[in-house]
Length: 108
Ligand SMILES: [Zn+2]
Image 1: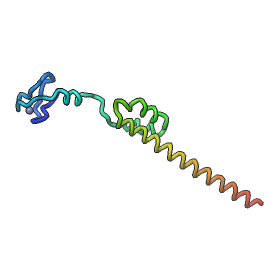
Image 2: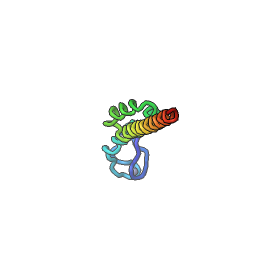
Image 3: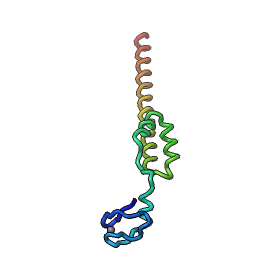
Image 4: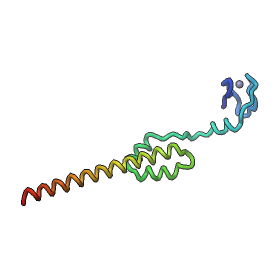
């Protein structure tokens, strides 16, 4: 089922003109609106991308053609998590090395 873009009247799928207001129904516009797949990121997949960044990158590559906005969200989530992990890793290694060198200095 589609609707008139001008008056909102309910139309049959084969309609070329609106039976209510008589305006032409744009076939290209309705055809594009009928695409079932929404270009919106799925929350579950965002979380999955954040937990396992490699899945986020795979989703990004797979969905880039059909749903670029959703794909970008998964890729961004994966990238942010990767960045956060690198920061945590650097922070821990700095913390550990300073603690170890502090211990060594304490013993010397
Ligand atoms: Zn109409």
